[in-house]
Length: 539
Image (tube, rainbow, N blue to C red; front, side, top):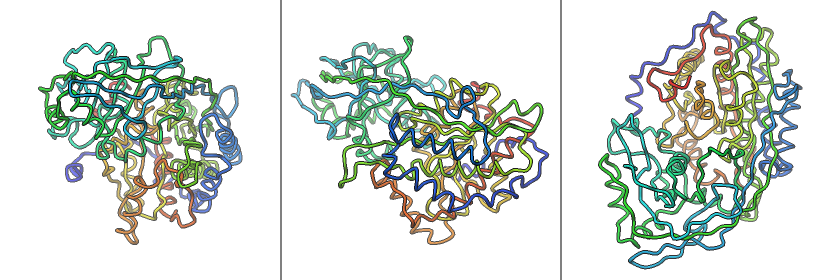
């Protein structure tokens, strides 16, 4: 895939007549010390993991607003404030009757969260599957442009689907080859099953298809899940579930089926849904409450009489997982890398922009969003209800988990080639003696897993950078440590700040991002989606 990307013609960067290095006078304000200080505070135990609607949530919001005010921003929220209120539903589900599957080959009772996890998909007092038929639907994808339909018109009303994670990989000419599209995301699986009237969906977890171990899924079981207020037209399901591969194998066997054989057929267009011949029971009670949080927004007004009516939005999520069941005696999920680091990076951008002698032509909105870990809810709310006219928002740059491992020659771009921001970043990287690469983990579907996706969904070109891998020092060792993060620290209590973090790479990356933002804000032409991209039609 990397070899083929080398032949990719980059989308043309917007035309600009500005200074080739418009941030030279302020980029020195982006420092290791500034980043470290912000991460230390936001990931301190005092903030209790910054859970949505908690005391830590409020402390983080106050801190971020005060820092933006200190660095010269103006309030960009509602009614001249720093905040855009975001109301949420919190739903905590408790299993009353565990998942029980009965078929011609016997009966099995599954244990949560050892074998499966379950969350409610609606705000009712109770969620259940009562003798619901289970249908294996392969990847659960309906993609007319790919001539792919896993559902084939099957009636799913009142039924539960068992569905594979990811998208088909047997044909490199389909579904962008190894690059995961939104069809491969678990959220799409749930959404599509709900649209078709299913009362539930069970996503089969494998580490390869998810990109993280089952323990990450298990951490979510029994916790409070957050939702934007439900609308009457919203398609909902009683229960949304994940299960281990072993549990899925046992479930299929109870109906006389071999899971591997089912999955093999599901790699082809010829696949048809397979009723497993088993029935599933599950009953949960729901505790529902209303929660108030907010996005925190600062504004640097543009200097051009006409273009200041347009805006570049920069985002980073400030929430994390809060307090949960302890692991090795620690119950606070501090979220230092994910995403106190992104907030710290953005505050350094704010500081630098506040010191610019000549403001960029377009307005810049620095937006710290809530509830990313709950399904990108804060950014989704902003994208649906922007504080700036949506048609006037020309681009989004997102920061989520910055480089803490050291300086690299390269910097990775998630969604490389999807829009003309790729051309901007490539030009800036080259000028800085660096190399822009496509994110190598294309199979993880990272473009759909952070807040920039909320902007893409409403047609706004967006970009998301990840740490590179071509380290100047101890390349092999640093890549081993970097790679171990997902396995050992991601969404765990030990995602904490350490003085041993090497923030030189973060400094260089943030200076590059700063220049990309300013170039975009000064460009004569607004960014565009690449011809034929999945989001082009939405602009």
